[in-house]
Length: 127
Image 1: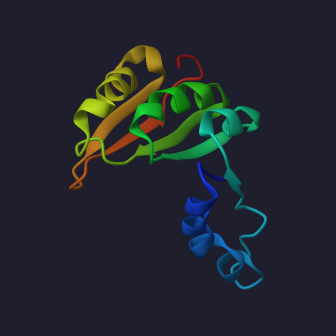
Image 2 (image 1 turned 180 degrees about the horizontal axis):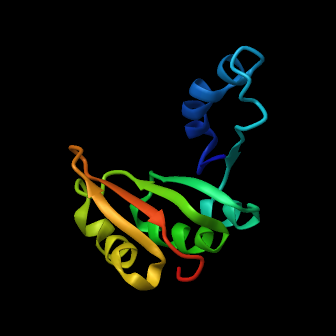
């Protein structure tokens, strides 16, 4: 699932995962859903278990999104958060939380230019 805040931004994932890519040729239409709206509201309805979260777009919501979804993430689920080195101030609380044992995640920073947080759900509790 991809959540975009505005209809204008929905064009980006649709270009990658729209009918051309998710139709019969690729066989992905059953796996891709694009929703418009506030991620914290839209994702509240999402059922689990969750295996992968690409948390990219609004740094100030990254921590709230993880806390919302973590209870539905299975052990071993992966969270990828881009630009944590590009916007260190915006991601400071997020990275501190994700690195704390209470979060239930094991987290490292991948050495890409923008800094990519890579976290694995280590436990069913936390978050």
